[in-house]
Image (cartoon, rainbow, N blue to C red; front, side, top):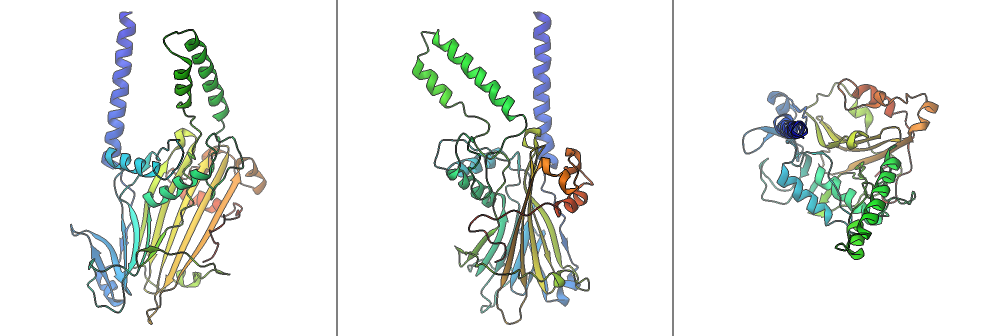
Amino acid sequence: LKRFICIEFVFRGCITIYHNTTNLFKSTIGMSQSRRHIAEEGVLQKFRASIISDDEGAHIGINISGWNIMTSSSSIGNESEMEALTDFLQHQISDSRRLALPEIVFTKAYARLTRRDIGKEQEVNDDDSEPLAVIRFTAKDALEEWASCHNHLETDGKDKNSLCKGVAIIKSVDAKLWEERQARERKQQQKVSSTNSHFGKGAVAAALKHCSTEFNYDWTFSSPYTGTSLVSGKTKAWTKAESSGINFSLLTDQSQPILFFDDVTLYEDDMHDNGYVSLKCKIRVMPTCFFILQSLFDRVDNVTIRVKEVRIFAKFENDGEIKISKDVCWREIPWNKLISLGLPSHVGSWRIEEEGMQQTVTGMIRKLPQIQLPIGVYEHS
């Protein structure tokens, strides 16, 4: 008994140390990986652009052709920030299910572009007037849209056709075993409680009702988010277009210098070792245009691979006209169909989260089949 107590004490101590070192690891290096590049001031001046700095003097973006283009990386959300975000998301759904956040959320990370009224002379950092147009990408906005979709999903996840804008409750390969084990535990609990006169049947039913299954929400965090677009403070709906308005020849013009670039991670999660999901936003600014690529990569090991990409483009016009184009492309494939496309089915081949794998996986993603977009989400707008 003494030996058992000693072993348990050491074991619990190891668990405590593990959690403490994990939190320390997250707090010290858990930053959204920013690869920000800003051209030298002389180059910016040549193209009538200027640097934007925050209150502490750090360079966070540039101003060009009336646009303030800024990004920010942040540390992983602390306990109070994550609790506040959880409460906010919980208020987006009408049923009693409990949502969970991705393991890693960079709560203060963003990519944001604002355009002010071109008829007014304003300083670069003048925030007193309301922007004419705002385009932004944040984890909170993405998760808000993801949470809202749960209002249209079955709570038990048994309806395979239960789907809202690509958000669904899918099962990992070990989900069936997990649910069978849970069913046995519930049955045993009911059997034990029925022989206990101090624990009535009503209490048993209430307790079991609140023992929610792990699979009653989309734990892959596959948000249909395509960015937040505001005009004069109000959400702006996109107009469907027949073809893409993105000038790819302009984007591939290597004679044009890159004035600003950044790659910001908004959230990621390893799905309890069942896969990996990440939402990232890249932004590139050239003297003639800007380009944004938001990419959601969603891999459920041995089940499916999903990729949702949003591209936004605008050319800087001298006449002040603001025309912004957006393309949306969703790709998805069941795991057992990978071989038929000549793609590897080994999980290790798709670990985009591992160092040195991003370029290889990105190349394979282009071979995945496109799927139909949900109503209200346009391929070109």
